[in-house]
Amino acid sequence: MADYQNALPDLLPRPFLKWFGEKGWSPRAHQLELLARSTSGENMLLIAPTGAGKTLAGFLPSLTDLTRRGQLPPGSPFAGVHTLYISPLKALAVDIERNLMKPVSEMGLPVSIENRTGDTPQAKRQRQKTNPPDILLTTPEQLALLLANKEAERFFKDLKYVVLDELHSLVTSKRGHLLSLGLARLRRHAPGLRTIGLSATVSDPMDLRRWLVPQNTPQDDGPEAPAGLVHVTGGAAPDITIMTTEDRIPWSGHVATYAIPAVYEEIRKHKTTLIFVNTRFQAELLFQELWTINEDNLPIALHHGSLDAGQRRKVEAAMSANRLRAVVATSTLDMGLDWGDVDLVVHVGAPKGASRLAQRIGRSNHRMDEPSKAILVPANRFEVMECQAALDANYLGAQDTPPVGEGALDVLAQHVLGMACAEPFDALELYDEITSASPYSGLTWELFERIVDFVATGGYALRTYERYAKIRKTKEGRWRVSNPQVAQQYRMNLGTIVEATELNVRLVKRNQLGSVGRGGMSLGKVEEYFLEQLV
Image (tube, rainbow, N blue to C red; front, side, top):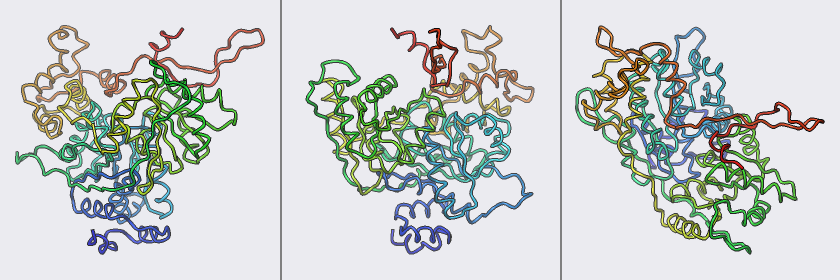
């Protein structure tokens, strides 16, 4: 590490050295090691505890490279996106943009940064295709949409870095499988790109190190060496307790209404409290109960995926500006968000895993040298045992993140169709590309042919129906989409998160005659099946 400190003038351009000096800071050893090794051409995985500066470390290679490149003069040829940042949460992408723009503006760097999520207006997304920013912050689904576009090769030809945040939470799901296939396609458009994975909770680092590199080469030399590893140990041990109240814990139920007065008292004692729950129903009910007893009129907000995007952005901005005393949230806020004034995390209900608990309590005192403070609130007596087990596992440093596993075939079929939407493909070339992705490295040619046939015909059960023939073979032997409507349908239904039919929810008021009006401001959306269950 000392060598990296001695090489500081060579690693960091002058604006960075000046900025660190003015702040009274110095770059941490792991940040410099990641910068040096990534700049030299290595793919990298950084595992570091909460508050260790992972985000800045992940972006330093991009920011320094863009600073040395300088502002492109007017009239320059089209320049594609330089760095792609991919996060599992829309809120995280927005938060990273806000936090990253501060040092970029303070240093006066010639770097443009924008986010692209499902909440981004359509006009802005279209403009980004013709005038991309240097750094684009996005999600796996938006990456898949960009890759299914005919202009994808032009858009990504200058890509140098792909930064993958909270990597452990992505790779084990179908979203991770879709992302791995997207990464394989990115390597085709930009063969020299480097990947940087960031994570705080990892059970098997080698799984992620393999995931970050291609698993075969055109010369059939076998998989690349795993990505390099920078593993930061230490950090203050968390302070976790299980809430005790005067009221008896019920035998059943999962909303923990018995503990509402005690939770409110903790909110009064602390600057800012994040209250995590496991479902949106719990979030809504707990938020309502807290406001019912909020005699001090404390600013308490609600955040979950069904709320209107504008409402969520307001809550995030207020949280970032330290204008709130508490936020009741689901998993929409449990990763990566850097709000330093959060000094308490309350988890209502069993945390459902040691890794998940570690992730959530890390939002409290988001600094490496300060212990995170958390209180677990069991909703019933059986959850007392679950909370105790999760607490013990956290102190032991145990992780329960599932292994990466083999790639899902329904995700593969979706990707095959997406690549046909981008341009006609050669089956053998696409097979080589797909098997370079870690989850699909063991895919056989025979199974791949069956997947292509399924996309082309709908399979043995649906091949007699013309509408299920989504791709066709050209005279040249390449596969293309059957018609433009197929591509449109693909783009409207892309992704691995299966969504139920949703209905808009609006705030209404009764008029003077007592009848209900047509509706005012939009509150968000709710699943139709949920409304059907209401009494």
